[in-house]
Length: 68
Length: 211
Image 1 (cartoon, rainbow over the protein chains, first blue to last red):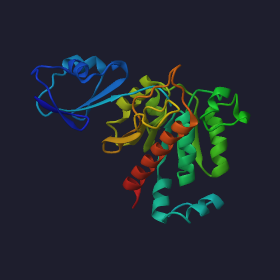
Image 2: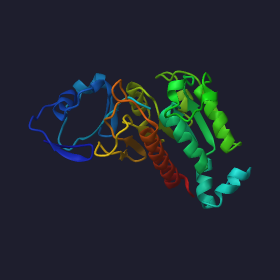
Image 3: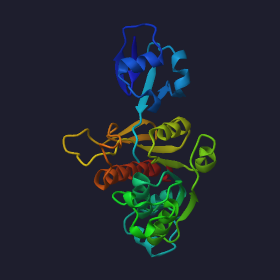
Image 4: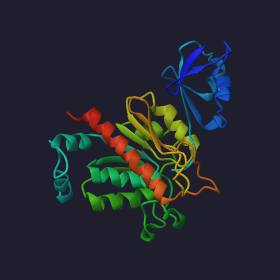
């Protein structure tokens, strides 16, 4: 399955994978500070388990770090 | 027509087309947090010609802020939003600034920044950065986030980048340098990110609002 992540193509072997599982593969460690936009809609952390990725999905993943 | 009410606003006409100044004067800009990023972003925006602001921060100026935030010893103990307002009015006496000393949360963020056309995210805390992202990236606002500003070293480190993740939503910073006990923030890098954020926001405003 091919999806787009932060503007780049990304191949996944598993056919059934939700956002939480994808973030682990993608190497996101601090999920509390991470925001996810899925096909142009914000998906909050509580819903990540319920969204199963499919071909051509578009993800924007932003991990924020403190300091301002 | 652009507003020319004082010598500062008159001086801006030496540098920019009237239509650009008009675009900058048309928008209301929100700045969420007036620490290292926010205080430096604000004087950059005022010097470029923006005149309508909403600023929010619950903090007062402390001595340890002075290494990077746009305050002086005279400001210690004042609310940051009040010290900032005084400073900005020394540049342009006719700027209009709505100041809030509330702690921003899910339940008040819309009432504070809902009427802004542009928002600069300049919070300290990553959880609040994320909250603002989740609240406003689906809106029609121009939003500029600061992300990754810590450290004194910059050569051969993760580069400062500007990423437009979707139309008019920008992330600026090195994206990894979190302020911590081992990695302090310094004026040099914090102001670099603040300047880049200002530049990005100003260009996005002109792109959208210039007639």
